[in-house]
Image (tube, rainbow, N blue to C red; front, top):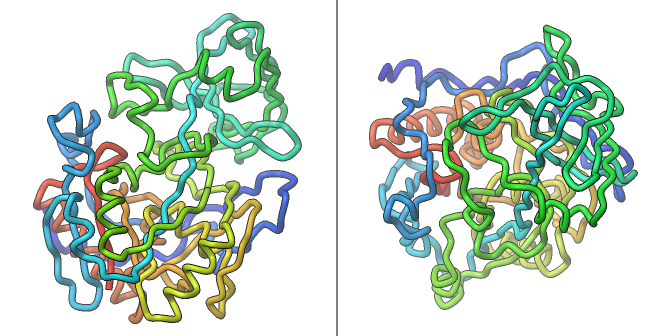
Length: 396
């Protein structure tokens, strides 16, 4: 491993602009800063070896959910601790606030057939307010699926007499003219969630060669179905761990953000997603900040929701709607002070958000150096990547 490569800065720009879903119920939150469409996706320069990709749930490896490894990093002094997620509560103080995303994962992958009878997969991403869906068409492989850029506007047949009509591209065409994301009219014989339960299955990518049931993709506190993919930073929580947090005086509060498809192959910016921050959570965030306590976001989805609901002056309010917020390394976070996250690919836009968290109380360059040290340690200590992998607590 070349440490010099890891110490290169995370670029502050990302390709393209986040896409807005049509007709939101509230005001779409604005980005803290506008990405530069000409630059590379925010990244660290490193390679994740194939054997560091978690290809199955930890339970299949003989671990409890909270038995995955936890790397704790302190941005103030670059100290790093290696432990397991079961020790998460040991790093928090009474009065700290942990905010979780209670959106539940749905069976968002459906079998479809095109006009020529070819078997494909349709991934339901976001249910838009005009009753259309944002969808991705994918080709079927022995290990799951892969992008299908040959899809064109028209009708796709679904099981049980359902159908999806690809109406117009949602994402721009790539260099070869192919489109990944479409706006589609979906006609089903049952309500969408019932239909998905009957005919669908969880989205999985090629690094997970075996299909797992939907329960493997749910967090223990998930309550409201709506996410195409699991908000996986919370997977290590168990009911016992949540109880321990509360018993220690650490508060736990919910938000909802329904995730769309991530499409790991493309590393695109997150596009508009529906979120809701309830009044009790907003109040708890404000009180924690006023008292100088930590506000720990469990995952990038929580950061996105809370920062969308918080004014630049730091007042968090009850809020609901669609957000296309993209947080860049130089952005000042107004609500969140710490984050639990998985480990991300070098081109993933989530790294820009982590850079912003690592830069609290310091400069973006200082935050970059801390994040580089974290990822160097994760690779050297052989932490596992992706939704079934290990976790990182980035704090003061």
